[in-house]
Length: 203
Image: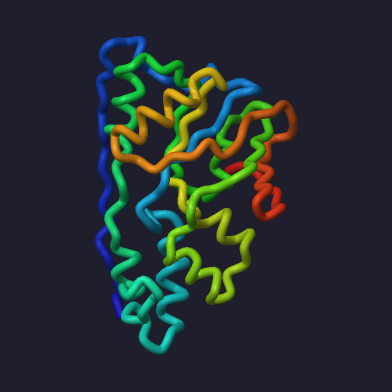
């Protein structure tokens, strides 16, 4: 077993030009719609849990999933980039109120804003096989929703009038998208109606 491992860190500096392309999230408001872009798999969400559960299996990372790939192969599927999606929206001057990567806290990350807003999710994307497998290993559903991206790797918050344009532009850029819910006045939490579960926001 590994006793020690190198820790890698990095820093990125970006320049936003023109200035009007800057999206700060301040425009987020009740009535906004939430559009989710499908993930390619586990990304980096809950990787420690996935490793822990994998090591408990007889074949560990060589365990076969219904997809025909091994558990290790599913976990190592590269994280999808959403740059082309965001660029397509900015190019067409879509009125973006907030952008949110689906990392950390799983579906609960949707309640990222500190203001007293609730987020009601009425429908969802397909859940990747590796996450379904983790659920089958006994991980509680609420823990899955607070740990894994559960199939959504990126979120865009826009007013209702922009939903159709976002879905069209995203599809043209090669992404699978769905309008999954909306922003409401209320306590800071996510109402995940497909599973009738309420999630708190990120700490």
